[in-house]
Length: 141
Image (cartoon, rainbow, N blue to C red; front, top):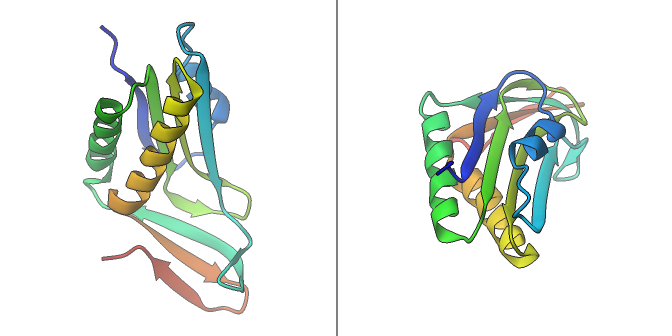
């Protein structure tokens, strides 16, 4: 049997929504939900110039663990999660998560759990640079 977890990765190169959707191609799946997180131009009322994502050496392993846990908890056919690391510009895709299931409710619930758990547990930290020349770290221990 093919694993439900179809694609898990951390990459310094741009992320591709089409790759994620293709990885989850399954004629038995009636629904596919997709979340695409992008770098926005503001945060907390401040103008963002760009950011860097840094991952702990265990981040990929932890991301895979999160994916496996979500796959075990929800009735899904397929699951994918990719996160960008390195320097990103405004509008760049930072993270893509997606799930497929026979029914939309399961796919939506699994995708929400996947992105929320990823953000809470995977050791990836954001260093934001603001247009006024200041910066801040987000999500560091």
